[in-house]
Image (tube, rainbow, N blue to C red; front, side, top):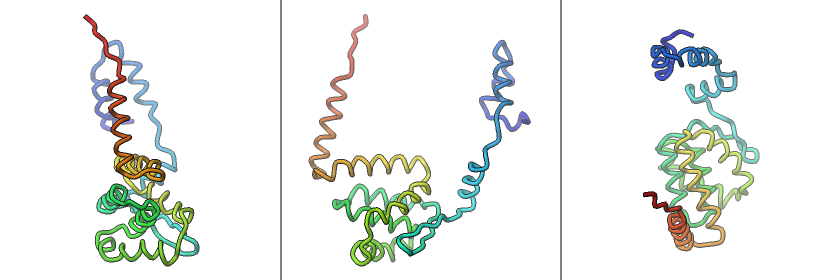
Length: 183
C-alpha cells in the first residue's frame, strides 16, 4: 500500500512516530481489498444498474432512488392516514422514481395497484425491500424510523393518540434520568 493511499488519520500516525509508531504501522498495512460482493455493489451504485422486481407476472426495474422520490416517500409516511394505501403509494414512488413520472403518472399508478389490480401487501413486499436497498443509508434510516413508528402504533390508534403517547414517553424518559449532586 502506498503512503498516498492512506487515510488522513493513518498519515498522521505514520508521520507521528513515538512509541506507538510500530503497532499502528502494522495495522495500516493489514488493510484488505474489498470482496467481490462489495465491488459489485459499488459498481451498481456508480452505473445505476436496475434491479428487477416482479409483482405477480409484471416486471419492473428499480434504480437508485432520486432525492425527490425519497422526499415523496417521506411525505407519504408523514401525511397518509390510511396505512393500507401508504404501501401502495410508496411502491408506486419506488417504481416511477423520477420527477416527471411522479408528477404525471403517480396518482394513477398507486390507484391502479390499489383499486384495479388489488395487490396484496405480500405482492408489494419485494418492491419495498428492493427500494430500501436503493436509498442512501442516512435517508433510509430516517425513513425507516418514521415508517416503523407510525405503522406499529397506527394500526390501533389515531395519530393524535400516538402523538400524545410519544410525548408522555419522552417526558417520562427525561424525568427518569439519574441526577447526581457531586460536590
